[in-house]
Image 1 (tube, rainbow, N blue to C red):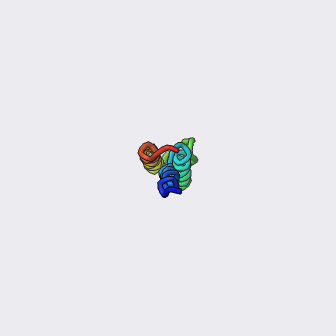
Image 2: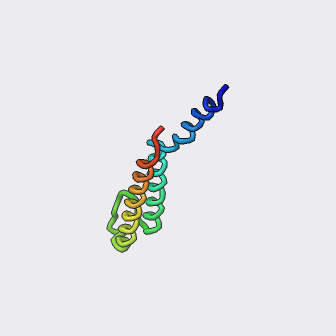
Image 3: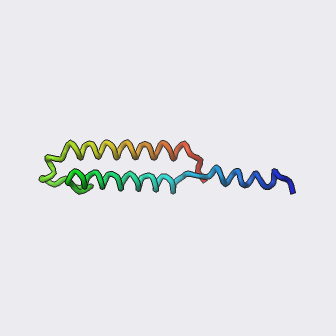
Length: 83
């Protein structure tokens, strides 16, 4: 058996590392971090109660970090090969 016959399929398996599953995992990580950030600011992610008005700068920082994280996920998974 030729060595080329063995190595060619193995090289394809090593390349298929990213895609929709990786994107979903990355976005889940971003969501978990933003929920923790909101909790640290004394708010609940997805809601803005009146009591959290004092925490608005912290919430804005959480939103900015979430946007950056989401954009990074999109960039990384677009550059990576799709299985």
